[in-house]
Amino acid sequence: MGKIIAICTSSKKGEQKEAVNKAFFKVNHGIVGDAHAGNWHRQVSFLAKEDIDEFNKKGANVSFGAFGENIITEGIDLKNIKVGEQLKAGSVLFEVTQIGKSCHDHCAIFYKMGECIMPRLGVFARVLKEGELKPDMEINKIERESPFPFQAAVITLSDAGFKGEREDVSGPTIAKRLKDEGYEVVEQILLPDEPNLLKKELMRLADQRQIDLVLTTGGTGFSMRDQTPEATLAVKDRDAPGIAEAIRAESMKYTKHAMLSRGVSVIRKKTLIINLPGSPKACMESMDVFMDAMPHAIGLLRGEVSNCARKDK
Image 1 (tube, rainbow, N blue to C red):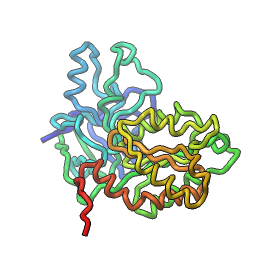
Image 2: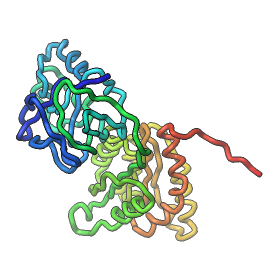
Image 3: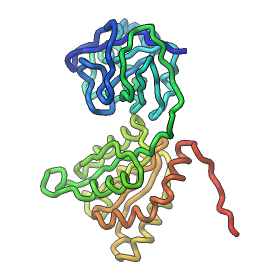
Image 4: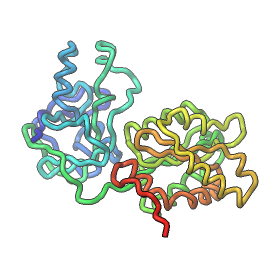
């Protein structure tokens, strides 16, 4: 049994949150009156009292709300919670959307202690059902009523597109295809051909948002600015070469230039990352190759299905 130890809010971003006696949680918004609420995926943040207490033993001496957290819990193993799992308190239902958060500017806690626990242990969620909550109310992880949908992200790599000199057609085309096939496209990102920026986004999507499938488009050719494969390989935990090989083999039926594509396919944690070419037509032809296999691949990565050998008649 878990319970809410404290609820904290702030009216302005950048200010330390303060404990309140009660708060109203609004669907697709978060806490009414809190600066971090809004129609996005990090509507409400959680930290475990056990983790705050452990940090204070090192001399941090921080109070509730110091990390910008909204809800402090006790009795729930937030360290092992996953994206897609749900928490319920009173009538309020939360769905976990992200684990941890990169700090853009180090806070006073970091400068004092040399670390901050929010980037590692913070849990973020959106509000699915609303209501009023108060400290000392029960909060627990519950079983989902329906399967967690496959989540995907699309990243376009294009210097000209990033500068606004050319419209990004491939990214939206890929996103539409994914949505038509039942995927929840949670992010669409447009980047210049800068490998460090791509590496940062791939790590964030895999580690914090725990996305099932990330498709990149562009940056796979022979140009000196085409660094998408190198950035992708730099963040991999494991190779998944068969997908990229199958794309090239099928694309060779349409153009001999397909042999010049350097796109790769890899796995980071439980996220599958696949590089696609830059043109919308080539992207659709590539997706034709592997989309039928994705439910099984993602199921394996999620641990929801087991490997099965092909049975010949």
